[in-house]
Length: 192
Ligand SMILES: N[C@@H](CCC(=O)N[C@@H](CS)C(=O)NCC(=O)O)C(=O)O
Image 1 (cartoon, rainbow, N blue to C red):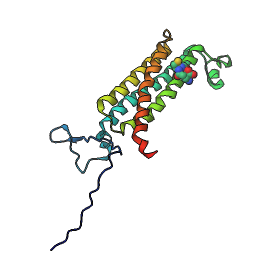
Image 2: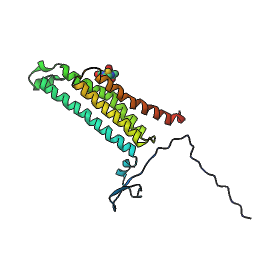
Image 3: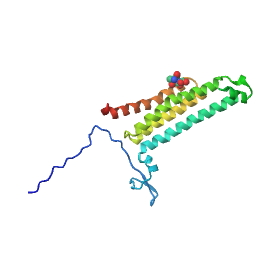
Image 4: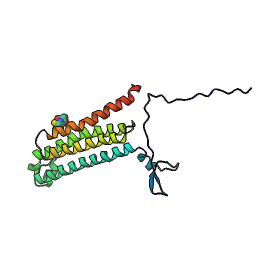
C-alpha cells in the first residue's frame, strides 16, 4: 500500500492584518481599468494598485501645494509691505530700514508653521493608514475632512476670521488624524 506524506496546511494567522490591495491595470484593448494585473505591469503602475493610497496621494499633494501657496503669499506680502527677513534682501529693496518684521508677514509665517505641525504628521499617518486595509469610503472621509479643515484653517488664519473659526478648523482636522493613529496602533498591536 502506498503511503502518502501528510501535507502541512499553512494558515495565515487571523490576527495578523493583511493590507487589502485591490489591483487595477490599464486594459489596452478595451481602454478600461480592469482588475487584472498583467505580469508585465510597469513599476510606475504599482502605486495605483492600492486605491486608498492613491486617494491619499491626491489629498496629500493638494495639501503640499496649499503650503507652497502660503509660502508664495508670504513672499509677496514681504515685497508689498517692505519687510524683509534678511539684510541683503532689505538692501536690494531700498535700505536696511526694511530689515524688519511686519504683523501680517508674521501671520503668514504662523499659518505656514501650523501647517507644518499638522500636515507633516498627516502625510506619515495617512500613508501608513492607507496600507492597513481601510475601506475606500472611510479612508476618503478621513482625508477629505482633514483637507477641508486645513484649508479652512489657512483661510481663517490669513483673513483673520473671527475666533473661534480657526480653532474649530484645527480641532476638526485633528479628529481624522487621531482616528488614523488609533487604527494604525490597533493594526500593529500584535507586534508590540
Ligand atoms: N503650536 C500651536 C499648537 C496648538 C494649535 O495648533 N492651535 C491652533 C488652534 S488655536 C492654531 O491655529 N494655533 C495658532 C498657531 O499655531 O499659530 C500653537 O502654539 O498654538
